[in-house]
Every structure is written in C-alpha cells, then in structure tokens.
Amino acid sequence: MSELELFGRFPQTRTLARVELGQFPTPVAPLERLGSEFGIPNLFVKRDDLSGTLYGGNKVRKLEFLLGDAKAQGYDKVWTVGAIGSHHVLATSIYAREIGLQPAALHFPQPITAHVLDVLKALSTTQPELTLVGHMAQVPMAMAKIRIKEWLARHPDVYYIPGGGSSLVGVLGYVNAALELKHQVDQGELPEPDVIFVGAGTCGTLSGLILGCHLAGMKSRVIGVRVVDKVIANAHTAATLANRCGHVLEQLGVKDIPKIRRQDVTILDNYIGPGYGEPTAEGARYERLVMDLEDLELDPTYTAKAFAAIIGERARLDLAHKSVLYWHTLSSADLNDRVRGAQVEWDLPPEYQHFF
Ligand SMILES: *Cc1c(COP(=O)(O)O)cnc(C)c1O
Image 1 (cartoon, rainbow, N blue to C red):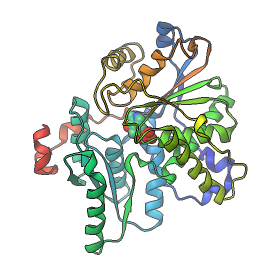
Image 2 (cartoon, protein in one colour; image 1 turned 90 degrees about the vertical axis):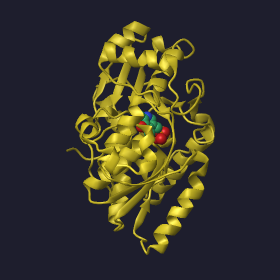
Image 3 (tube, rainbow, N blue to C red; image 1 turned 180 degrees about the vertical axis):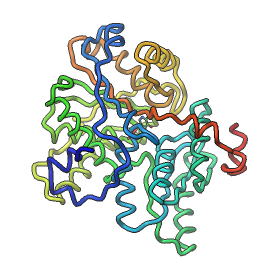
Image 4 (cartoon, helix red, strand yellow; image 1 turned 135 degrees about the vertical axis):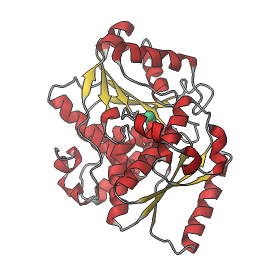
C-alpha cells in the first residue's frame, strides 16, 4: 500500500493519527459512453466508491483520520449522528467495529426508499447503540442529552463525530484526496480537470477538495451540488471548514496555506428537488442511464443529483470543451450478505420496526 500523498508531500503531517481502513489511491477512468451520449468528450470519474472493501464511498477517507484520532486518544466508543439512511452512520459503525470501538448513533427520519431500508438493515448487523428522534430539529437537544447521559454513566471515553464526519480531522481526508488526484494527473491518467462535480451535504468533501486543489496548485474548479438544506450546505460553511482545516495544517508546520474565499466556493442549488433524501425524476432517469451505459450505481439522495448537475450545466459551463471530473462518492461495496443476514426485529429498537 502506497503512502498517503499528504504525508509524502508534507512530512510534517505524519504526526497526524490515522488508521488504514481503505484502498488508496482510488482509480480514475473515462466515462466514454456517457460522454458521447451527452457531448462531453472529456468526462472522467474518480472511483471513490472503491475506497474500501467492507464499505466504500467518501466517508472512508474521513474515517481513517477520525477513527485514528479516537484510537490514538484512547477512546473506546464513538457517537455520531445522521438520518436513518445515512451512509456516514453506516460507514462509521462498520469501521468502528472493525477496529474494536463501540459504535453509537443518533438518528432522525428521512423519506423511506429501498436504498434507505438496505442501509438500515446493513447497519443493524453492526449492532450499534441507537437513539431515534422524531425530527431533525430535535437533534441538538437530543445530542446534548446523550452527552450528559454518557458523562453521568462515568463514561468519558466517548469520541463524538459530527454529522457526515466533517470535522477538521475528517476534512483532511479530502485534502489528501485532491493531492492524490494531482498525482494521477501528473502520471497522465487523466487531464487536469477544469471542473470537478461532487455532492455537497455537510461540505466536508467539497471543502477538503477545494483546499487540496489549491494546495496542489491545480486550477480545477470544484462544484458542490447541494443535496441538503441551505442551512447546512452553503459557501460560507464550506469556506470556513476549508480555512480551519488549513489552520490545522499550518499549525503542523505546513507553509503557504492558501486562503479560501467565499467566491472560491461554487454550490449549485437547483438539483436538490423537494428536499434531502427526496428522489427527483431527473435523478431517477440518470440512475438508470448511468447503470445501463457505465455499470455504475447511483443513489437517489446524493449521487443521482450530483450527476444530474453535470448534464444540467453542460451548456452553461460549456462542458463540451472542458475536462470534467465526476467525483463518485457512493459506496459500491457489496452489502448483500449483510442485508440478507440482517435480523432487524432483534438488532434494531422497537421504534424502528414500522419502517419495514
Ligand atoms: C455523505 C455523502 C455525501 C456528502 O458528503 P459531505 O462531505 O457530507 O458533503 C455525498 N455523497 C454520498 C454518497 C454520501 O454518502
């Protein structure tokens, strides 16, 4: 396994704690059929779906630093938060178990789709401690209660991971990802992208990529496709996350950290449809098409909307004459065994049973 680009390029960062969970670098590949279908001859994909064998997608890069940090500090339990179909909660729970940490999560509802139910089933096999609230707005209060309860239980050894894994430590995973991409460009695996499209939820992926591209000296414009409420995904949040993460690197001794301004962040608002987790008709269409033409699976919540943005912006951004990278953030790890073997009546609390 090759060393992280971040460590190679900035040896000062080798003091950062990390556990190896995934397989890097992830491949890049041309999407020739989709490209010719839509008149984008230079369309490529970054296969972060292949980031891990137990579970892939964009959370693995974040979790290598997050769970590494938890381990290094001697914690034995991790709490995190997300919607019931959250890939982040699933990834955290799978990999926490893998390295001997007890997983726990605070859940809030989201529209039920077949994909959401599969995620819940897979999650149940990792037997996390779960708390479900009735609405996303109740999360902050419920999280405060959990912290008090853990503290009263004299259980201070809990590591708290924010939604989406987008803490400063988590964002470092995507700074590294941009440096990894730069290396692939230098190796001639793809042209330097003019534009990179990626789904934007908690903005950790987006902000890490923006900072990383600047650090690597790439001119690529990273475009976040908003799939959550504007309160969570916006240019201010993304720029702040990027700059704070840059500050972490600065404190480790990395020089010439670029400052990310709000104007450096592009977030598209037109592809979310009715809301988070609500499938869109155009998303569903591209899900089928991308599967048929490239054998690549998209999901309704994130990647179908991110992909729809590429097609939707084709004319406005003149993508026919640009080199375009679609950053694929969905896991393609095979969860069939987990899903089939799930015993939700046993492994999920009673208040979850009506979802099935
Ligand atoms: C979590 C997730 C995202 C969003 O990533 P953020 O860093 O939270 O913005 C995008 N795509 C998929 C498939 C995800 O699971």
